[in-house]
Image 1 (tube, rainbow, N blue to C red):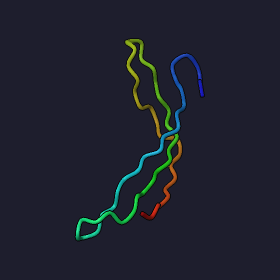
Image 2: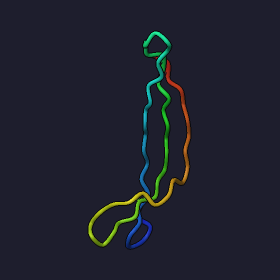
Image 3: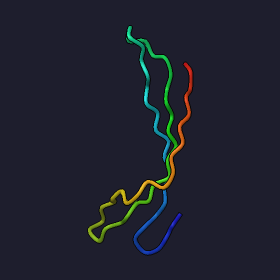
Amino acid sequence: MYLGKDRTVRNLHIAVPVYDDAGELVRYNVFKARILVRHAKDGKLYLYDILRTKNKCLSV
C-alpha cells in the first residue's frame, strides 16, 4: 500500500523455531506484522514503524 511520496506499508510473516531441552524442534512461533517503510532520497529503505503484530503457534 502506497501512503505518499516516500512511505509504503508492507506485510511480513516471520517464523521463529522453538526447541526443547534436547534440541528437538517443538513448534514455530509465527509472527504477522504490518510495517511502515520509508524510502530515502538515496534509494535506501528504512523501517519507519511497526503498525500491528499478531502471534500464532504452529506445531510440527
